[in-house]
Image 1 (cartoon, one colour):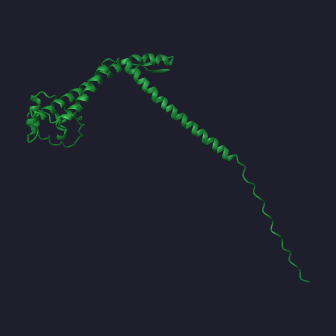
Image 2: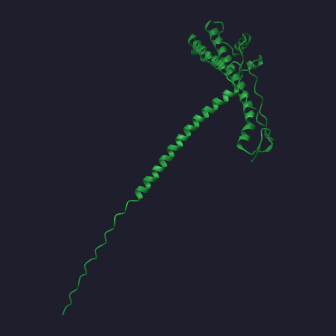
Image 3: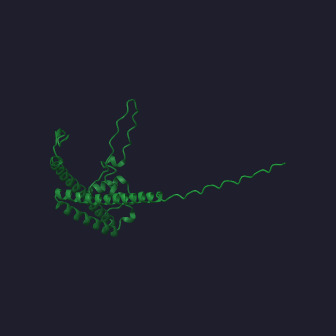
Amino acid sequence: MHLFDSDGKIRKYDTPEQILEEFFQLRLEFYCKRKEALLKNIKLDLKKLENKVRFIRCVVDNEIIVNNRKRADLFLELRHKNFDPFPKKKKKAEPTAVGAIEEEENVESPETAVGVDPSDYEYLLSMSIGTLTLEKIQELNAEKQKLVDDVVELMNTSPKSLWLKDLDAFEKELDVLDQMDLAEEVQREKRIKEGKKGGSKAAPKKQPKKAAPIKLESSTE
């Protein structure tokens, strides 16, 4: 059989095992990249939680006043207190059609004017006042500890172990699908048998209709 190899070139394979050997190393490389990406995402979530805990504690201790203030001033204070910004990902600009009229540029916001992106600290300021409590700090600390445990576990897990874990999960799902297919097959055979059984019953014989008596007309002499 001829297939594309890991370099995108046509190659002849004599057995399925040769295909597995060809792509094993490539698959393993992507699991290494996957582990790095997972660690990066978890660490970002961990840093965001740490910032939230510190922000709530500053509000509770009146080190940061959020009421009756301009957003631009509040953003500057957060930056000066070294809170990490987490700007939202901006959508890529769509290509402008030929002949289309360009829209006017957005008016610069006060936050942008002072050098702060409005979305930098939205993850902090979007929290409602009711969540800026000591109880919320305890809740976030519990989430933070779970993420710390996840980081430690992931760092101690090899890419091969991640692959094997996915294969185990795949086999479990495959077993579930096999059981569903088997149950459907049993039901299908049952319906077929019931249909044959119902069709094998002899139909009741129709009784022949009795001939109507022939009336003889009396001849008049």
